[in-house]
Length: 397
Image (cartoon, rainbow, N blue to C red):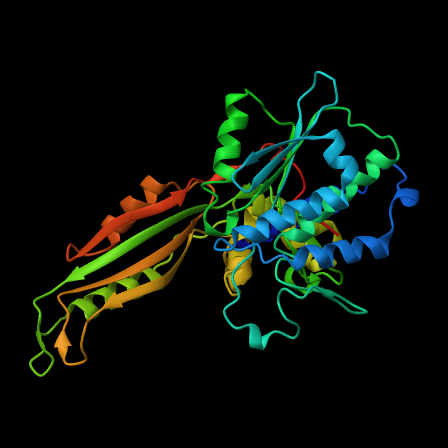
């Protein structure tokens, strides 16, 4: 017994030594800052704010083509050097700019989209969604964050660089889609196909990316800017249940609606497995040096504490989505009259596929998890797309 206790004590000491070693030798975050050209003489902040506000006043919605025409005229007027220097190739209302560097090196691609999400309840807005109101704190309007803010920032930077006589070391492409919010099939997809036809491979692709999170989400005392280095896939699935129609006064033991509800409940209560995938793990490794000692010890030893971290992150929707493929029922359809049992009931489910998940693996899971009484039809979707440069940091403090 004494020998056993001695072995246990030795094992504990070795474990503590390993945990402390990993914690104390944790690499410090890279704090290097790139040198940027001085554009202070070419930038008027008040004018930039006003241009963003003006951009928000164009209701660039799928059913308002004239708004895109007006917006394009606004861009030509407000960014004259950009439109004199860069070539522009239209794809419907989408615009693909090319800044030729005259150098033979891999180009860069900066993306943003012109279209915005429709407004369902404008009366609930603090300011009208397309008024472009500027106050002491904010620029208000639909699209300020998603994604005209990015579009205008890219063009502001391009115009300022041109004013100071700067030219890029390698070619730069600016791709501004017009239908991102409804799938991008006429804009981004056609631009991507054309770029592929030209044989272009990019050294850098920058899209709208991540978000600013409160530091408390990751146990920090300052905000964290997330930089997305991978994109979850997108897949829509329709479930359908069938049953004998009849009168609601003589219901059978199960109905189409009941079977469908049970299927959705099963998927919600049996989610896809959670794990710290590559991007999520790298994010935690990046914030680890900024944590208090106890949390730093945990994050420096994910080989041991991963289950603990996973359970904690599962508790919030915004962090749970970092761990697994998620599912959300978004559309339901059944019945024609309150006292008639429907013959069919259907539901549309939206899945966001985590890196490592494929449409085929998800279909196989659904076929195995659901009873034969539920038919599964795959709708539209996009594959998981890890981006080049996956070793880059996922966050900036």
